[in-house]
Image (tube, rainbow over all chains, first blue to last red):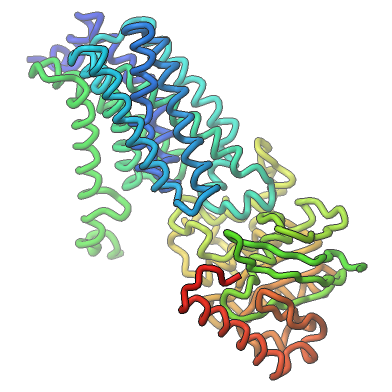
Length: 290
Length: 247
């Protein structure tokens, strides 16, 4: 089997594979930088919580309009943002910390989402919402994912500097420039938007995987924010590509194949990465003798 | 009150517990003031409220029209993520925020000023080092270089010498004296009373409430320090009894 036949042919031969690959590229471009900032802000689990919070919104959209891309996306977006803002409000108004209040809200919305889908739809519908299907991405979904990625990159470029400073030295940003929480909220909106984009392809539960795994893996290699973001996008895209091929050749579901490929990059990085990896920690001699 | 910054009957509370309680007074233009008091006395809270990071529950801080540009703030090191992937030069460059804002680029002249500021704090040639590779003392030097670039009339330092080696402390104290000579107003939260007596002409002693504010030799009396400790002891006891209504 030639390299072409293995790596390229499935995409050349089948439109659904091509669309899936383009969807992965678009997702990777948006998710890479967003995931990087989640990792840097120590909000890795926040992404996970938010992805669950999107479910009831998507489910309500599904109830109203069936398997409609726009209805489910709008529902997911609205409920995702509502949960993020409610959790923030509760943690400011009460003594509960933000992670705990977020956990409370997302668990409620997850249960609500599963309840809505299962009372009104079939198991197949539930599986679709939970696990998505990148192989059934149509042009409309592709446009949505691409639009969200474009928007994310443009907005991130605009707020890049204050966002970086807010992660690194929030007191300085608020004292010198003000508006710290404004950037936080804009960023949260981008997180939810990208999860909505991801859930079309990978489902609510796995959308966050393409966001967090490449970003966590990149942390072991890159040492500046921009290179972390670029590397995360690259790893996310390659994971999508390899995952699709694995899924195609071995007849495995595409979502898990993609996320597990990203997981392989992550594991490899933990062991062999350039900064702070196991290799660094236990075999430092290999690097520091001159 | 005619200071550069006046504090007027200021109370700041966390969760209804006042951390700063009815403090009034005035920082004179060009003064060099140490803010001291027991742990939990509200020193950092006072600084943060002056900077505008926290809001008063009652009372107010009168900044007499000083904008953000005019006030530079050094947070406690613990509030900064020192593992963040950013290098020394970029960290110092934040001091140019007022000139470059959200989208401006740094001109060659700006980079020259960054290099000069690094040389001034004894970190010449460290520009490309990631901050994660620095010691606590070196990192504090970086933050002082950033303050140098901010070039502000009022400089607030929250525990600038906590966990910092002696040599760095001496170098940074020299920079503070230089700011004082230039006529800038410097306010620093400190713990070492000997250091305060030696280097800071003015002192604000607080234990949530104000105990003394004025010339250091008159404020830091044994009697005043005993009183501050006694008040702080009261918080600890209240806490132990867990009344839940300590305020």
